[in-house]
View 1: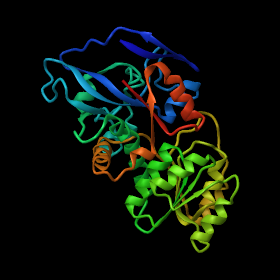
View 2: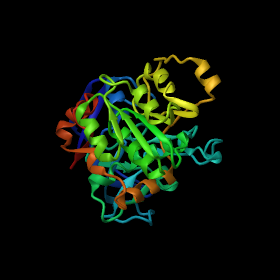
View 3: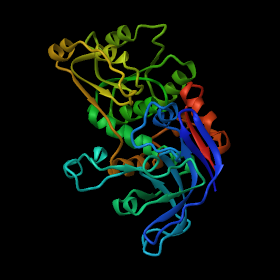
Length: 345
């Protein structure tokens, strides 16, 4: 089979590799669509290394069709259309037992410890099947729509951590695919105003299509002045950082009203620090928290939202990529040329 093999920073090669063989407790999935995540870019650049093997096949956002089923697997059949939750919880550690399976102490993941979706086929290990990480997708969803269920589920986790409520004013920093998912989820949650900050023109235009009330170019306008103007001088209830730029942490915190929440959704480069004035936290009683991955419940809700038509997937994805030009798909996301690039087969 064909696979785009990651050999190290800035080094991916399309190769002919052996198709995975499955055991009686495993499933083989033909990958119909996979998508490039910001984390994939950080892996490609060598900025994220935890759990990443070389050589290996990365890619953790994927959907497909079951090609082979192990003899002891009863709940799936050849031809089933399925989505795959990449993070496999152990279901036994302290975090799994206390509602935080997304940060499981013993977590493994497809695209990390197990080969991922930038290939023609992917093997679903027995641990993933046992944990319920393979899910049938609704017939009315295209693979291109369904592939965003995983990142959307992560955003749902982030919205929960940010505590977005009806009537809130929400600021989203970064107008990439993740930012546009947060825009839509905030509106669904009942936010009265969603203000997005993004310097790239076409992304601001997509943000308006996704439901943003304001799409601000921070290089030409004062985001802080706009937020204060739209909130009677109080500030935003919630700010979500959908881009991992350390120097923006302090300015993002300054956008909050007293008692507001700053959610650091995006991943940051390991070892790169951000400054923040502790008095902003102390005197304004703001909350700063983070988000990691998704829960299995989030994934099911995400699929339902997409299937119901409440998520504008067209504003989020860019199609037209294959395994042959996957590096271009990665670079187009990195450089902001397109939205979430989707590789189809």
